[in-house]
Image (cartoon, rainbow, N blue to C red; front, side, top):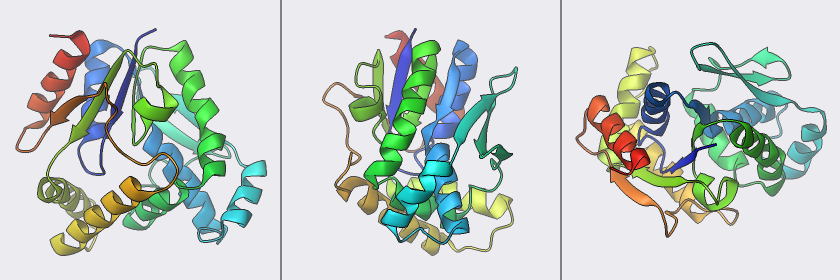
Length: 219
């Protein structure tokens, strides 16, 4: 099995680029951030987002899984409910950053992520895939872009969905998320020593996908 680990900050285009590259290569794409978002949604629903002890307790009766259709598209199931369309809000995004720093949450999702990679050719993206989840991945990529560029992408996504946000708010969220992800005690976001750096600032989607595929193929 070929395992590709893609890490990097929020808004770098990891999910979009990894999904497109996986489709072209015939691999399964695994969006680990979606798993953390599902836990964040569950925490918000149960009003335990800011109480790690209670969050750990509700994990005992929580089921999170990924399902894939024939095209390889992924949907996220929370206790059997498809929550794919509910986990892409700014609130849940920040919540995901918060719960990802909770050791019990990381342990809860680790086995699921590794099991998927063990049985499939995968491109898996997140914050600590190469360093923690798949330390023996065949290819490790740290995908990034300037904060301004990442905020512009996120802002366009929100506007297209009809969200009422300003660019300044999105940029502030990007910078806050970067700080949270890189300064957390558990598995902070940082490039692995054996990661290939890939900066997508100014790239079109096609250019970024081509860049990643060339890295994976060793070209």
